[in-house]
Image (cartoon, rainbow, N blue to C red; front, side):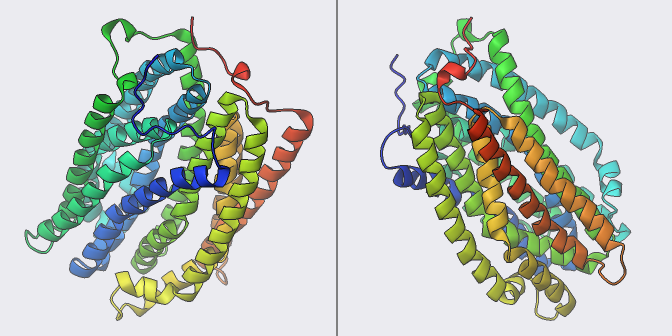
Length: 462
């Protein structure tokens, strides 16, 4: 079957380190650009609209990350199945999985969009949002929620292309979108005076253009994504496989971001200054460890393709290479964030906002010292997802986030600790989950709990 995989890459061949890095770098650059969406909003909103608007946009960002994590998790799960099938050269199975994933992930996204739009006010109250910024947060979220479909379409086709080893094309469309986002921010906020609504509109318009462009490209250049009428039917085994994989990956992403959302609610209870500091510090924090998160996703695709191809020893060598790269990157980025925490905060916040800057600096120095913990956790997530054990990724996420939330709420109630307890609960959760994940990996190796090869993968053909 001639699929004409333009620029698709087979990760089962060639140098392991070189293969992973060539695939990972465009993903890293793409997600750094993705972060620029909210960094642009944060920077421009902070300078032109003040602390209240900054707090509203920052709190809304945490909520939006949680909501998008649902369908991003579904797309990620579908992509993992595609990677395994591509590694096994099961092209007919890929066609069937495409139909199943479109129906399942598209349907869930539609329902989620309706619920989000209908429940904005209850959601804002649930987050313990201060009364003075409720209106600003509503204005921002209403427009952002109108763009959920575009965010889904972009991520769906981006994960499909990455499953085939193509990580460069999504980067191109995202780069154009980010530049447009920044231009529209500067047009809508300081010139048109649309306030936080202008920031939201700039993001939605930019994401819609990226989604449309990527969708058209994928359908035009990759014939396997184009379905004929007689191929548009659901296969029971394919639906079961996609549903199982996607639901567990979705659960992992949702649990992770729901825990973050619960922490956001606790942060909000400490007032606008802490909210504003947290909003900025989280952007810096996310930007700092985003490369290792994307490397973990690239590592997952590498493992999945080799798992489908039955190359167990190549997977083992890939694990050693991935751990080495992650360790060195995290140590370097930890040192940079710790040393430059104050200048990084001052880049977003006016120098006169001393209290906000000091709170943000403390957060960054606590989190920044332990990036190696979350780096290893991303590798563990990616590995278990790739070897058909996505349930273990959910367990690790619950372990990490459960620890974080319980500790945050317990420590924050102690007057001598207060908000500092929230900051320390996060790296403690990372480290404990790492220990459990590594222990389970060695147990799985000793007892043969995972096996390599497409023979262990359920055949989707009827």
